[in-house]
Image 1 (tube, chains in turn green, blue):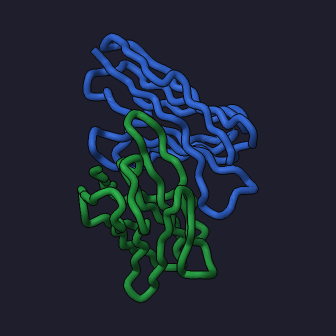
Image 2 (tube, chains in turn green, red; image 1 turned 90 degrees about the horizontal axis):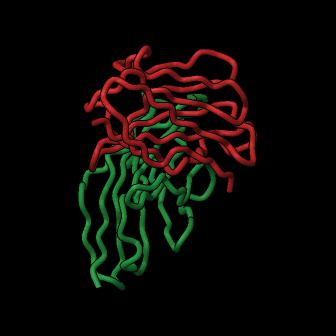
Image 3 (cartoon, one colour; image 1 turned 135 degrees about the vertical axis):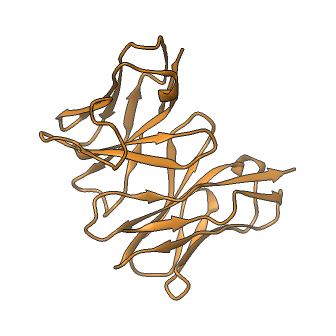
Length: 113
Length: 117
């Protein structure tokens, strides 16, 4: 079965600095990879996805992620963090032909002014 | 993007009562819906997969008789927490997948916070 690991519970960055939120995955076949963001007491909002094609995926709000097959990673990045980026971020994986999606434990991003 | 509506957003009930949470896909037909439970500062735990017109598939450890799921139409799935107890207090989130969405892409509701007194 597929699984996702987010090794950092918390990431703190200063506003204007680049940010990285890490994610590694495990699947037996080809992965579909996703990043979602959650604000307090809200559902999840889709940021970006990797299905196939270019390893660098660009998504909403200036976020991007790089698919690295050899390292089985899909780290989320942004060149310049905003205070409003502070939220809970989830990495998720779905295996081809598998119906459900598995989420990582989440990483809380705090961007300080 | 597609919109999933979840209702109610917050509900408080007494122990022993049942609570129903609705999940609707507003602008697409959802062949499959998923119900998740989220504990404070924790990830989403998949509870069950709901397929229109058939029985839900529950994850291991989830009580079928306590968490009743009905997916009666292509736009509505309901989760009923029966005989709720304080330990059932949690944030419940539904998601839906349409037949035309890219593989794996899910659309999430805003969540329902259940508090059982």
